[in-house]
Amino acid sequence: FEAIANPGIRGLRAYDPGHDLVALRRAHEGVLVELGSNENPHGPSPAATQAVLETLSQLYRYPDPLGGDLKRALAARLGVGISQLMLGNGSHELLMQFAQVFAGPGREVVASQFGFAVYALAAQAAGAPLRVVPAFARGAAMPRGHDLDAIAGAISPQTALVYLANPNNPTGTWFGADAFAAFMARVPESVIVVVDEAYAEFADAPDHASALVLQPRYPNLLVTRTFSKAHALAGLRVGYAVAHPDCIAVLERVRESFNVNMVGLSAAQAALGDEAHLRWSLARNAEQREMLAAALRERGYFAHPSLTNFLLVEFGPETQRIEAGLIARGVVLRPMAGYGLPECLRITVGDASENRRLLAALDEVLA
Ligand code: PMP
Image (tube, rainbow, N blue to C red; front, side):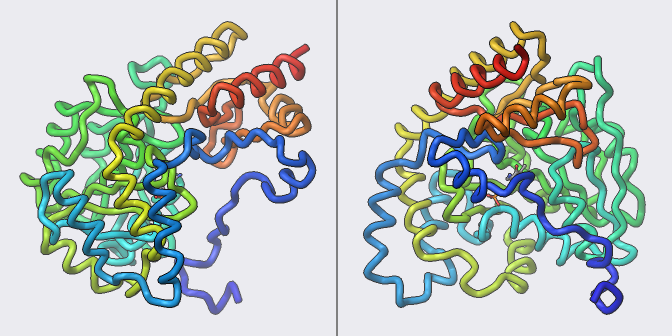
């Protein structure tokens, strides 16, 4: 089937979650510490859980194909028009559709080294050439982060689409308002710029800025966000894009009619309304992230600066042994060899008890 698949699909590899979590959960009987997928262990708003229960009597119906209630809530929250919003079955679906719509053979995609893996996948699946721009080197102010200057310089007449992530996964790195404004000023209007802000709610540093601020000035700027991370609804698969209404209108042509499920729509709307829960969750994450980074530093490991709910940590030549030792003790992290970072592991910031168990297991492995 390789030979008869579309050319872009040939040579692609299916999504690899790193580990068989179901088998690991069975082996560790409910005590597995899962810090591999950047989920939010503080859980969703109780209002979202309640909203889920309330949809259960309606499951025989199709969901609202327009997602009207959620879009109205998002529009009010973000200060944008409803026609500027598109909902996705997770932001992953939207990221794939951007390439399907705007890139293709002869219409190149540009992304950064160590950028989120879906960008390369989206380009390949669309049959588009991919240009990967080197990230900042170790020792730079933002090691492994996006080099926006170099990315702008790599844009050619063939470029159709640029994917940026702010903050980025797996590096946790970010860029600020000035750098991004300078970048956008260099990008031709015919090139679509996607800023993936899956982790933006976590990013509280003054030198981080959302691309939403510049969106009204640049019709070619698309911003994606998700309910999977800060809102802790990964299991329900709801993401959204903010863009120019004309851009949304084109993207809507390829959206599967009922792409976002009914349970997800209502839970996301309820989660959006519970700001107190969000603030509580973000504060817990920030506190645990700093604790974990400090604890790793004490053990001699460098955790890259992060404004997210995960840390990229340098474990050196021992990385594989450490990862295997942690798995044997029921602690799952994300190996980074697939990203070209074989001496790093990505650690999702857990809750206090998960982080304690991770550190205890690490101390055992290192003993
Ligand atoms: N963008 C980034 C940078 C991510 O890390 C992820 C999830 N790991 C996504 C997008 C996709 O998230 P979802 O499909 O759950 O919205």
